[in-house]
Image (cartoon, rainbow, N blue to C red):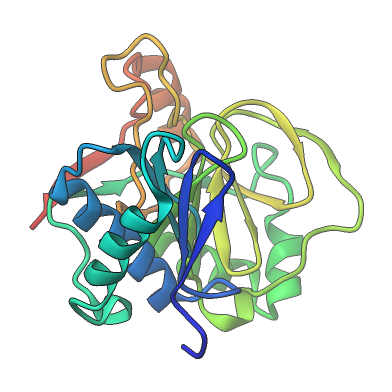
Length: 245
């Protein structure tokens, strides 16, 4: 991509490596892969790393560490391979999260399907069979932005906000799906409902998902959803998972 990657200084808190100016699969892949590579270097001056949709942030005390020295290390790493085609890190998790589509639990499915130019049944089939990547975590603790869906799901956000969707709501816009951490207003359309909890403050690992994880949202009936809500106390919401090698 022309003019990328770029390394930018973020005040005295670290360096940002940008792989693009808009969301794309290769740029997101590069950000996730580079973060794993920086972590593997175990550089003593690096405090932590994180990713956004298309960037990797390397946190370091730039008062104690010369920015030029860390920039040089990052440049050497960037020149080591084509990060836009880099393999994603091993050890990621594939989650299958049971989802109730439509009904009173997720009342905007029909509206979203119309915006995408498909029938309601086709929308359920497409969303429930899609395998999407956790692109980044943001907005609320543990809340994933996942994608990308096919181009016809590049539907805009609503002009007016929905006053509130519940925790576990599956919402869609701009070729992405989000599972909400907590009840919140949103401009994204509420198409499905899960019992999955992305943030579990009392667990040893409070944030369930990691950028690079993959998710499917298989369709379940209202009766199955009610059973999962009643029986599940783990926060998994009936999800199945396996490690990707």
